[in-house]
Image (cartoon, rainbow, N blue to C red; front, side, top):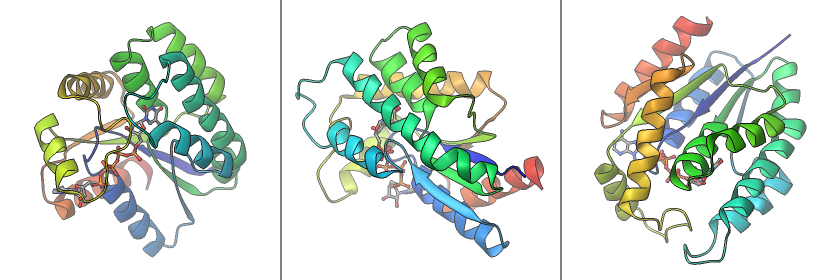
Length: 207
Ligand code: T5A
């Protein structure tokens, strides 16, 4: 028995968490056993690493090498403790961000060379590749508008400037072009329209 593993990726505020929860609700209505999780985080250890990584100022002393290793440590724990056991027992696992985030945030935007990122990802992943990756695509201007309209302070990475997020968006567009598992959807549409498109694609691929 093997479940289905779907990840949600994109720039800040693209709507991935909203869409993940809508898909989870629909799958539950269909009688499926669904696990919702996120990266960094998803386990006790992972959530402690998340706190280290995100709570703080962009001026905190964080070497790019230390940062990527923390993301990978959170991922390795997440896969061993939660994701793989759930998939093996036939559950539907929906994860908010996964290794593609490392490819674009640490690889493209922080300029860690692609071979090193792939090596570290491979080590953490242990072959656990998503079956589908949903990517709501919005402009950086829209991302900034949405972040600004949310109450609460920006996390350490959200404090980066526009050029950082243009690199992230470019990185995702390239991944979407190169990988069939990606499903890119226009993130500027109404949330219900986006959900319907994701649901249709999901049905086409898995049911
Ligand atoms: N990171 C992560 C790395 O650098 N490397 C890694 O390996 C990993 C795993 C994690 C941070 O860590 C970095 C990337 C990130 O910087 P996060 O918890 O994923 O951060 O947080 P964000 O990406 O910042 O996620 P957000 O919750 O801010 O945004 P979402 O999930 O994209 O969007 P969502 O659904 O919360 O919506 C944001 C707002 O937009 C509205 C929502 O109501 C909400 O107010 N919205 C829409 N508005 C209009 N039209 C639509 N279609 C809308 N959809 C949502």
